[in-house]
Length: 97
Image (cartoon, rainbow, N blue to C red; front, side):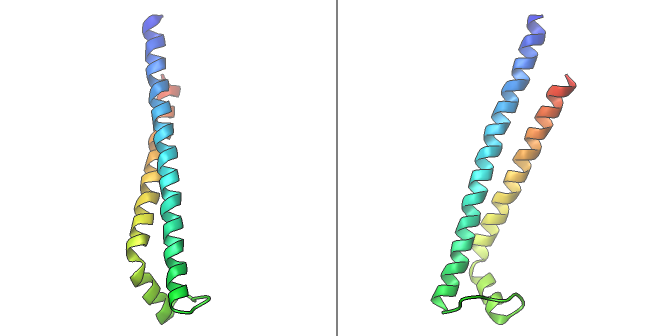
């Protein structure tokens, strides 16, 4: 009985750790997204543009200038997705036990 209980507690601790990781990755992804949106707004403000339509030269210039922020946002989004996937896998292993 003690071995079974220890096994379940170990899996629950893994789930808790994965949940904390997923929450942190989601928080970081939200921060990176906010940084990206701020970079877009900064570009528009510096260039005196209220709105930029896609597929325009201004859009291309904004995308070029904010590529670093975009790449960071996408990387954080992928890390959050992968952390949630690892959490789901840990939960599935617990349910299968």
